[in-house]
Image 1 (cartoon, rainbow, N blue to C red):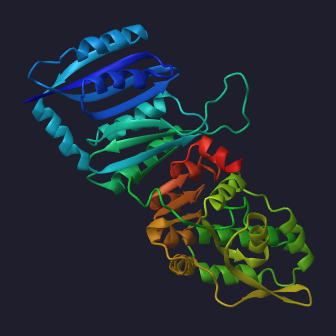
Image 2: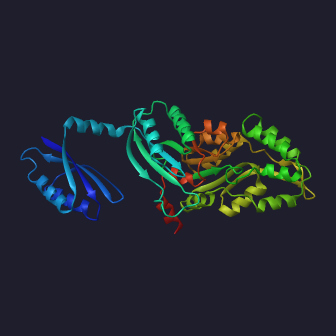
Image 3: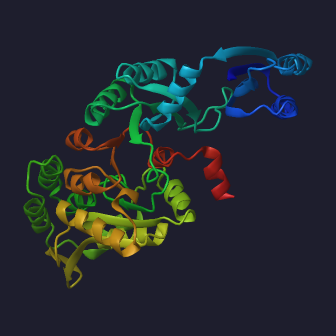
Length: 407
């Protein structure tokens, strides 16, 4: 018979603690069944689950560990573990796991308390909490700070849709974003990201900019809003808006293209993903005239948008070819994934309008970004409090990982 003991060590962290303690265990040939360590502000918490032969007791290993810990100014505690409890713990390792990402400008105790209570109320246990963003100075103000904490939770989720809804509602009340994902191999192996353009990669609806220049802004804006809310068929609303732009001079489009307002975090996100080998696509119900500008700026691999028609340097009020609507966006996402030889679970889709819902629904990670209410409610993930680079944290990246990519 063997004895299982949990060893807990706490105190001020310094180099060499783990090495010294495990060296003692090694001298007594003690198997380590599990080990975990965390450090917060130089405060160490180290746990070792070890197995001792019952015959002859600890054979002095506990005494040696006590001497070793005392010499380093550490507290050490030994707790026997019943064999049945250990076996029960072993059986739990096959339980489903999910990752909760808590993201905002600042995260406080109330945010963590509410999220923790939400998952605990559904029988889920928090195994690990990790801060993904760097430490924030309390002496220097940062214009647009980012704060992100990742929680690993264990247990069966009875209704994932219900949990999504509860976390979404919670985030809306607390002005943070809370996302839950299955902790599977695909979460760590995304390979393609497909962006909507208007109000996603750029902070405007280009067609509204064109309408304002043509003097038909209110009429076009009303049709745009109704379409994005899902109240109008996209293709019909698109034709109505285009007809109102007939005769607009191409020089106006050039002026608008030169001052496209890029969304916060877009440069950081795309540069980081490109360095990791991601393919980038723009799938837009907007226009290639503007999307191709972004393609050159960001190094985008694929662009699909509507092709404007010109006659004598003026808009005809029509487009060439097939109109890119929600259905077509989803088809294009599938086609690009097949061309790149990747699964849909490895695709990220990002958009804000109702015509983005089809591609958000089929992507492994579909994100409603500062989206219309109907989109936020139906999408599985939402970012509403930070910029596009918040997506990096949904992928589990830390600030130090991104900084290393930038160096």
